[in-house]
Length: 595
Image (cartoon, rainbow, N blue to C red; front, side, top):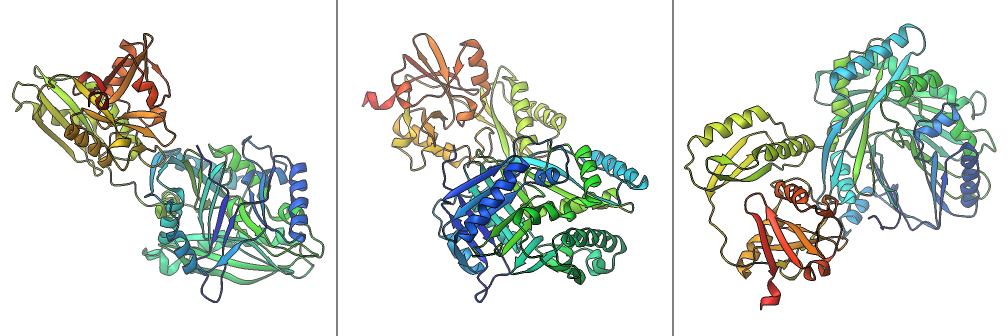
């Protein structure tokens, strides 16, 4: 499903014409994975050696790398501790040039992010905050960075989504990573560590406010945020001292306020001079993960995080960095903290983590609102409504309960509020005014939860019905479940409407689509069944089909198997039927064979 070559973008919104700090890496010559600390040591040695040979490295450390360094058993058994790519060269450009480069990419498709579920609601969040504050009272910790996940799907091009997000929240540590394992899209504002020669700089970020809120003017003086920030400064000073020359750790800036989109963040700056011959492994061991995403003290707090969080952090709260060539010592290095980051599977399901620093003075509602603010840059769900088209005859809507279940499921997955009892009430009120004749009923729910019920005439189909192939009649003739929400009946369906409208013009009932892998999916207004050797087959939902109400009925009635197949299986079938809840079963033949 995902065959694109490896491509890594490191973006910097503060880069300008005289400071080309945006980077593009493509086609690595080597890739390394480490799942144990022994392998981490080997990979660090290998990429340091590659750096000394003149190669460029990008590396990705998961949060569990920090757990391994701290001697904490990891719950996530799949994500590598460390992943690294070695490149012969890179393209180094400024922010405007990066914008032009992104605009020139031909594969970009409109992108939408659709949240489907969140692992915590406010009441559960509040309960966990109370547990953390109990740990603080007993002296186990001073501060805990508590996080939770949102899960959903990206429709369209992940690269286009990165382009959308970087415009919405320009940051110094934007990143886009694409390889066979999926995608990582980051709009991180947080500087983890930068090494330039022997100079080390880190800028922990603790303290958040909405730029338009009353707190914005007082963030720098807010006692709670200052205390939170100062605790992490002390933690990172201690971490840096493990690899710094004695007496070189300093804090030149405390409690700076920086602006990122609609969010204000409090940062502090810590500097140090790295001890000679410090290896990459020793550097990572000393600082990983960043104290701003754990709390203090680090190890005990990480144990509490693992106990209270429902889902392992994977790459979220880890670090992404580069290592430049150097002939003798470790080369220049820069690494961001992976917050404001989407981890995306090859089929474009995503998870997104968000959290806040919890202290004894934390108010659960304020912390919850801070998390919503941090998520805001992802934007709102796309403006799609959902609808059902139903058959009304003899005074009843056929299969109404099945339609309502599908409608409710679509609304919940797409983030559309729905009150099913209200929908039923409106149907009953409207139904009282309908004539007693067979009709087409359309029930729509807008993105704002408005309910609209309309009806129209429904004439019978006459004579033999036909199908044709969308590939022979439409410019857009493939369905891609990575781009469109094919499993829901949404108002985002121009390509479907064009299919059946074109079919009617050429004398067919419907045009049949194939997906981006060449497998047959469905028609513009119907599901498909084929019979061969007394066996009925239908494409699976995973091919890119709507879970049709009539389809589910026929799977049971015909004892049909869900199976992937291509066009020749349809054309060579003994029987072909289309179906939908409005028309029922429609036997069809290929139109072209009749011409």
